[in-house]
Amino acid sequence: MKDNGEIKQIPVCPRCGSENVSADAAARWNPEKREWEVSAIFDNGHSCDACGAGEVEFDWVEAKNTSEGRGDQPVCSLLVASTAHVTATEAQSLADLGLARGEFGFFLYVAGDPNALRTELGALSEGLQGIIDEARNRGCPYLLLDRDGSSIDGLPTYDW
Ligand SMILES: [Zn+2]
Image (cartoon, rainbow, N blue to C red; front, side, top):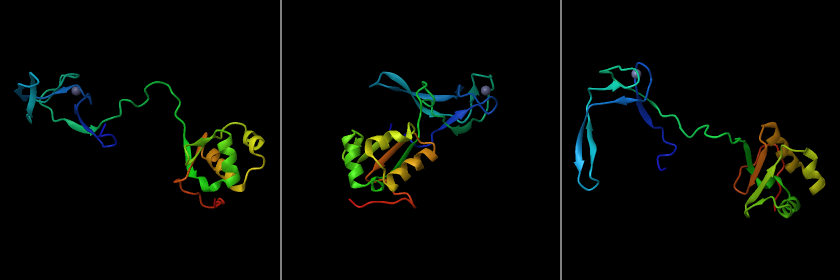
């Protein structure tokens, strides 16, 4: 998937918008693959199989991602922020709770009972409480604290 992220242009019928289009082309026999390969696509003879339009000039449009919306898995937002918003003690407690993500951060579910984490950690620091509130306010059920994440202005950070 090396062209992932690039905008791919596809030809569509100018009359009905269908992608089922064809064009006159020249073919060359490939002796290695033992099949015909298109060697040139002519500028004329463009037609649409969907609506039957002939001798058209294709519109070139941005291809839609066909994998989009496949299945019904929920897609959630995640707030990414710096681990600096938690204290060293909280970092240790989060790790003890199994919330560490590698050695570089923490992954927390924050949409549940707001008291659940307090029950586990005791009183939360202003930084950790602030970043959790920030995630919830932005509608993110998950919070990823990453060593390389950026810190959020106005929330306390801690050196550790
Ligand atoms: Zn058409």
